[in-house]
Length: 568
Image (cartoon, rainbow, N blue to C red):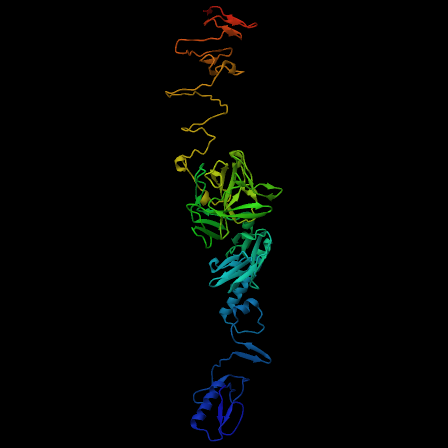
């Protein structure tokens, strides 16, 4: 309050002049009183006035407005400012506040959101993923959530702002672990309990830590949007996981040990419930969801080491070499190891897409060394039981390994690559081809179990052909060849072979082997000198034999009526 000037009277806020006041000093006193004092209708008073009036420019009392910051009734002071968002949300302000209609509506809306959120557990998550980042320092095991700009987080309808970096130390314990934000305290914590992270706090990340090697295997981004349905999200996480939505067409060379790299087209889109992770190619990856994919892809390889998952450093040849052949990952009583697959064996590798923001595309080492393609094709990836749900299988890569494949650093060649469709969206699985011309690599002779139209094959199995077979060339047809002693023990009618003892082709007629009409030089015809089996010359046939000839004991040659047998 401004002071006033008096002639001789002293008092609170009075300046005593001890002399008559000038006109200017009198005017100043009136102005100060008019500005600062509350008045009754007829007397100067204090702030206990029953009616708030003020002097006009002429010094007269008149009704008007007085601006005050609080009103005191007895011992209670009531602020005249509107309630803030914090007052409305926390309900901690014990004083009564004057509120405008718009402020009252806002309070109702805010409290309504929180009431709904407490029941549905919805409206929980990050308002925008790009307003923060997640990093992990492996030596210290410290995970940091760093805001960029205004990082807004919602929890059950209540709004929070992350205005500084938050950290948590990851326990040095093997296995998967959720990292979550406790909104009331603005702190990070970890848990292995699903409900604690998903429903009772704001989930931030899913990590897999290998304490044996002091290594981060996976840093899964779980900064889901606050608009997502919490119950639906939990069900999707448990039962479905991520979905490979688009991109990732594979390029490879089959049956060539000197070319065992693969490449994937980018970008690859992985959908993790409401989150869409776009995986981009980079020759020097250092950013969020970057990896070397094109031309020659580079991938880390996961395998079970004991009971803990481990990773072999990313490589353009993720098929790992053992001592003489490629490794596989056999499991015994739930414990995994690395072992040579063995000479000529077939092994599986699986390419998967994950929500790991560091190296999202990974190879998973197969667990069986197969002796045939049929059994390796029958392998089921879901049996591998990987400990993180947010991944989508992409490709089943079938390899054959041999110590003779020295062109390959891993001693392998790619036999086949098969697309896995179990968890893919239709956009990435909807391939239709009306003709073989729509397929690629048709010139590759990579199906050795089939007869090739213009490539030589050696067929060792017995085959039966019920239709006619025509050989229209002008070259030759090669018969099986052997001596008389090597004739088959149980021939069938019509069997044909070349007898190297007699120098002629012969056919079995059901009883005897006989010449097929062939003659050496077109002059010499040969027959056996011993008849060792019964034989009947039909009535409509004549026979001729060059003698001498011997008929074994117990053997009968029957000459039917009308037939002639001439021995020359």
